[in-house]
Length: 324
Image (cartoon, rainbow, N blue to C red; front, side):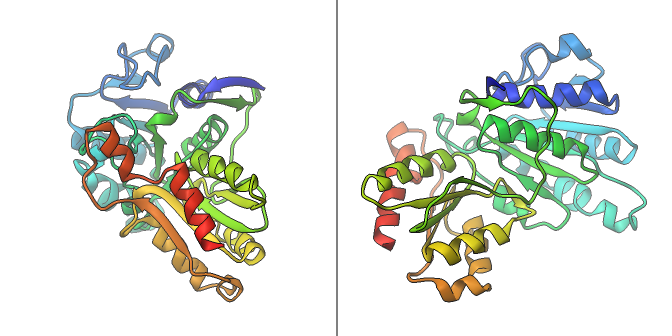
């Protein structure tokens, strides 16, 4: 095991897959000598050259469309969008082309495309560079959606994504890039659709993903000081979703709080809530399901207002105490 940053884990995953498979390449804005907006591709153009680390114009619709075509032709493109907000520019390529072409061609073509993008807030990047749009992507059949919360998960899930023959939307929360964690030096991959119980407990289930995992764990520590044992589940992938782990935990704890960074109204937490309500876990609940998400507002530039928009350790702590 070695301790590396989340950004380095992403870099290692792509580099190792590129060394193994010549069909894997990366394209995006300023990913060459500039190393990307968050420095993730540092050193890659020196190793793999301009033909496999391809700088593109500021034209998301164009280069995402080119990546879809490259995937259809047998390559394995890894696309980097600087910010997840920019997927709005290339939404047609993602949801009407990448998501549907394998189905429309009767399985005669594969779309092994990975779209990596920096998601979420916390850096003062304001309304057009701070959104969490994973619920939009999860809505479209044909797209897989991964949101890793640790360096270990980032590397393992990204390797799985690159090896997948279907399009994967890979959202990297930008405040996590400098966080560190233990990562095996040997090759490994994490299967999609397998949640990770980051902390076990018997009093309340916290279902979460991305940046909110660390906040939920901090809230669980505070709750433990009062004798409340919260179980923290990191779903890791929205599509496919490991609903069995969630249901099993809710049946055990009889209370559930769903936490995500995205806007609460219409967010993915509503889907998790619905899945629980449609399952046998519903009959075990001792209190209504609680959801925490961002307020329904464009994300402010002011750091104090930005922080007020999202769930915090204190808000999660109070939500669980309120349930109990």
